[in-house]
Amino acid sequence: MSSAVAQGRASAGTGAHRYQVLDAWRGLCACLVTVVHIPVAHGLQATAVFTSMQLFVDFFFVLSGFVIFHAYGTRIGDGRQAAGFMIRRFGRVWPLHAAVIAGFVALEVLKAVIERVAHLPLDGAPFTGNRSLETLVSNLMLTQAFNLHGMTSWNGPAWSIGVEFYTYAVFALAVLVFGARASVFAALSLAGLAGVVAFSDSSMFTTHSFGFFRCLYGFFSGVLVAMLVARSAGRPILTAWLEWPVVALLAAFILTTGADPTSLLAPVVFAAVIYVFAFEQGPVSAALRMPWAQALGLWSYSIYMVHMLLFAVLKIGFTFLAKAVPSLGLTAPVLSPVKLWTLGSPWLDSVLVAGELLLVIALARTTYERIEAPARLWFNARASRYEAGGRVARFVMAAGRGA
Image 1 (tube, rainbow, N blue to C red):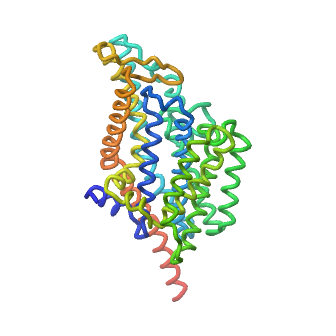
Image 2 (tube, rainbow, N blue to C red; image 1 turned 90 degrees about the vertical axis):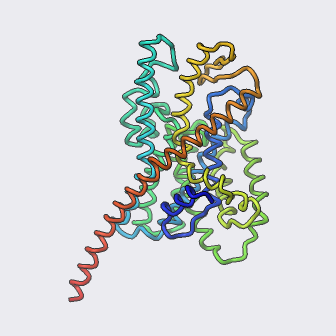
């Protein structure tokens, strides 16, 4: 394992077992979601599987529920611990989110300058549409996915971060009031499923409007899987033999589902994958412990959060390059729903896709080291101090009663 990955594991750990294989799965899924958003025209975009790859967002929800219960299911016993939990979760998701939003704001300013000075038309007028000033506040408050604007805005993928943050609050409240009860978690998961069925007109492919229900469904499905894994600990379970079959199940699901009721099974399929790979026993798990896979897992949140900003910058660069060097054959013939660039060759376009993905990973490593990890440590330290204050107060009160 590389020193950067090892350092990240040490800084992020809480003393509990860390599911390295599931971390690697998170990194792979972040890369797949990134590929969906790469602004390059290629043959895969016309296939149903390309659309279905968007469902890997639900993998994040299920895995998040699994990890959060594993780390905090028995650590939220009073209001201070619940507040400490929310401070940590805020520090986990918001600093990088805010930094990326700042990058988008700077990009809109740059677009305004370019259009005014160079008179070169870019993708939409600055500070309009899904990057209007009106939508900026809700994005900073992580409320942009509560059907406020009728569209995803600014950093589009961050809709999932907003709904997940408020799902953390639901989790903390549920544990605080009811304890770690499977019946409560199951009810919350079913409530999320019911909300998706009742309000979404595209089944699981709902984002800015009813994404909160989607997150509830997936997150608390993951919590239930974590409880099941905990109950299975120490028992002889032949999950090593199930790794390839469950991978085949996942592939079959992605290949056959679409924006129809079958997509509602996404959290169930991902829950099966997470259950099997939580035991880390088989040949696929061995491969996912390799340094490259662990690095992708470590940088997965940054990969997910920064890729749209990088692509926005690259699209501006492509606009200049197409005008400056027309012999390259770089064009954007596909304008709906987004501008997609092509070099006129499937092979060259494939190279362009791979190159953009590698650029995202390189940028994600930097944002992880410079923004994500330091911010998480800073907020974790303050959460610990806040919780420690409560423990000191309880100790003093108990000592007083003893006297």
